Length: 133
Image (cartoon, rainbow, N blue to C red; front, side):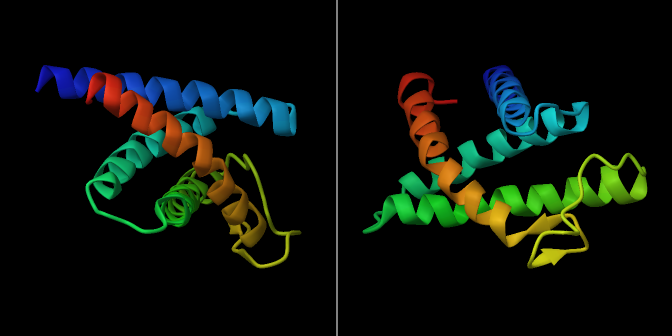
């Protein structure tokens, strides 16, 4: 039990820091809520990729990208409703992007999340092989 909690804390911290840095590189700024969202996403991605690795798949990378994009997009939608709408923090808005949903998610970033899942799944599998969190 302690090992699982420690592992999840490590994954959460790694995901939050890496996502915060990616956002600073991409947008030149970040917000504390994005560090939390990035941490949550990485823990969820790790668990999803671990589960998917147990299933024999023909197109593993494509499956990782699709599942990962869905996990991140759903997380972004939930955090958007909490941080942007409910708390009114206005961290981001995709209202000007085509194919957006209430300005919280959009097709462009969902596809981008899918591509981002290629290195993320490789990192998750490397962590799983070495540490089995």
